[in-house]
Image (cartoon, rainbow, N blue to C red; front, side, top):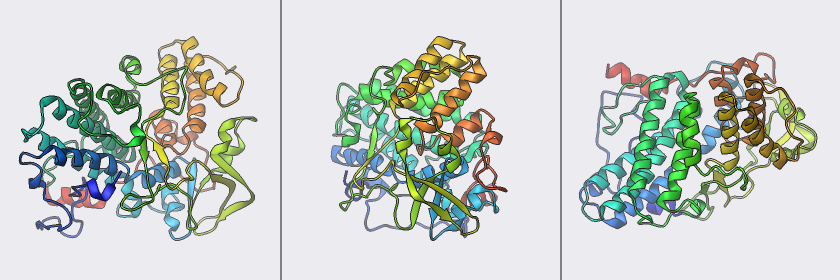
Length: 442
């Protein structure tokens, strides 16, 4: 993927309104990128292809901040950052959270994929250069990534909700409630699925290599439905989730690592994998979590136990011997949603619907893959849910789920606090630029 070659549009992000003077509006011409008008007036197929490939590129941009922020707040990992102590203090409730700090990228970075999708949708609607089936292919891709970006934003913002209508970035809607936001995201994803149904047998462009197996409209729709399934379980709509599950790529007998993947390439103009440990950024596993793993659990390979524990001492002191070991290749991948997550969602749906046998069957698929004996605990709904949350902790480590999982089950108070005085935040604050926007645009 040639990120800077194909990414045509890097315009105003959701929430990216000027924080200094929201009343002042100026048009700034970027000489390095075409104007929006250039692609929203009968765009050529080449322009539509570039917009769509750009969608894949910008979808990756907020991942490092998002995963490390959500992982830190959920106390599954910490960022031992040698140049920025707020990773360990503010995000752990030891100091007041700052709504203008770098970690707000866990929200604002996903405004750009939304903006990219909106421009793509407008361009497709205003062109006669391609047939309707191809138009639907572009739209289906755009709405799938738009829904995913909004879901990331909502996970960071929680009860603050998100702005669902930003087609005109200078006239955004007010933030919806959390429940309304989920409904809106589901609608975006449903629109994408319907468009993919009308997109024919093939896409009009070649998708990135990480989408092998998901590079036709029919198979890409399975990815779309998997994200919609996430939304449904966040809504606790188990009937809807049960209907969505077979529309995804859920495969109880298949490879648990099957997934649509973001790809990275350290060779310019693309970018290296952003989740690698470096001399200044070391992502560590919380010791209390990994010390408690069952003996023989193969998922322990997700961290590398150091002979000498790693210690952080800026603003707070904490030691752990566990250094993350998931992302080690500068040209590696990141799975957006894996079959293992779908298997555990299947278990969760079954537990919620009282189907004990189906719930334990899916739990045991994951446990067997991890080298463990079958689940032998209680089979009440609450016991099964707790067992599933435990499996999700280890199976989906450093994939952005622990904090959200515990919040949606009202279990934030059950998260182990590795250091006295630490707290588990319920959400990030609304970014300062958005707060200022609403002040000046009541």
